[in-house]
Image (cartoon, rainbow, N blue to C red):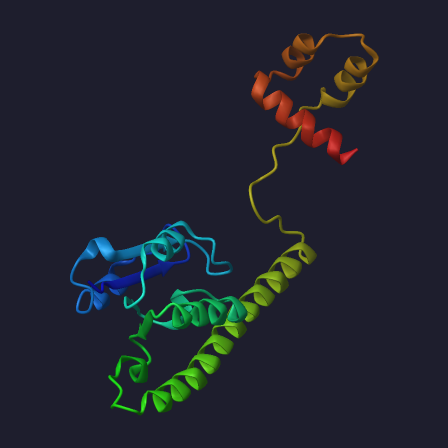
Length: 201
């Protein structure tokens, strides 16, 4: 028995899968065959995607909303599409109507050729979009640093007694427990700050 599979993905845990799920329900009647990930598209080692690959067999069909749901790395997407084709698994992309068409007898090669061209264009666009996003993030971080802004978690300042007490501790003049007492820190916080401080030396 051939099975219709579906794959849906969003990049972050905060994003919602419902829109893609609703679109696929028309083609994948049993939702246990719809696999999902809330993960970046930069690589293909995503749990849901890999589990789906293990479950698929020759003659099955995979439905996805758009090509970039598979990922944003052009070379890897193309490798997997070739793998699907070699294993006799059809890939239907809802946003690419030609992939949804049934081919007339003897004319499958025409649709294959059209789909190959479209997939080449779409995967190139998906990768370009990712590279542009990364470049913008990098430029934004550089601009923020140039303006003296700190990005990420705020850094906790060390107590004013820290440096003097650290010097004493290193010389063996005070014990670790005394050091923690002087700077008023719990064990876990103390060792985190100590680690960060020593890396900055």
